Amino acid sequence: MKILRTVAELRAWRRGLPAGETVGFVPTMGALHEGHLSLVALSRAQTTRTVMSIFVNPTQFGPKEDFSRYPRPVEQDLELAGTAKVDAVFLPEVAEIYPAGASTFVVEEEVSLPLCGEFRPGHFRGVATVVLKLFNLVEPTRAYFGQKDAQQLAVIERMVRDLHVPVVIVRGETLRERDGLAMSSRNRYLSADDRERAALIFRSLKAAADLFAAGERDVTRLTQAGRSILEAESAFRIQYWEIRNLASLQSIDVVPESGALIAVAAYLGPDSQPTRLIDNWILKD
Image 1 (cartoon, helix red, strand yellow):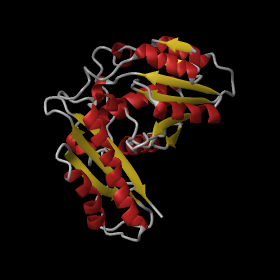
Image 2: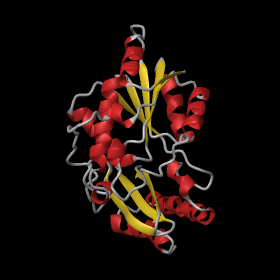
Image 3: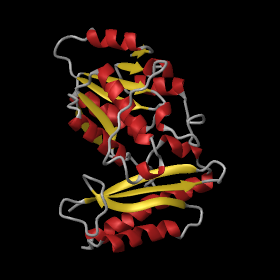
């Protein structure tokens, strides 16, 4: 496995690949878990080379968010990447991605606005910018993202479409712990008690999904069925629990035949340093 730390090293490695090679790309912020490794497995099954990036991107964190304490177990991550048979890991410093005086950013102006976009101004500008930079450097055939970050996926897919980026975006399913909690690098922040409570997020999604499966299509009733489960646990501070149009993420009153997305964001933990957890579920016949 090659470890590439500079733009020059990455480009030289990419140029050195034989003609006809297909490249799968798994962008991460490290603190790897089985969800990341499942994307590597998808890439290895569908392409001839797999590149992973490990980069905690400062521009997608707000001033009061967890950039400084975001987990960075680099040696462990490299060991996991090697075991998963990643061909190359791009492990740059911030200055490699954002040269001094960098002033160019990518802004998507529809699907980035609601949900997380409402509460984390500038977040998706940072996401879209770093992903486009990485696409330009890696030049992947396919890029792999987890469904857990549904709005991020929507932003990236819109960016790729609108800017004619020559890459296929592949969605990997959300991997979950035994109690249903979506795997996330931030789960390690949780205390033992909060880790147990966190499973209620999945139960809230499942309650609405079960009601939908029974024939309910009214968004207000579906929302109440799910949201009430989190509201009953005082440790949660719900940021949003909403059902949105699957493609545009706009508000809807009734789930259409094309389906809808349940999206949840909630905080657990002490007020001084709470953990923000997100999850989602696709409602579709």
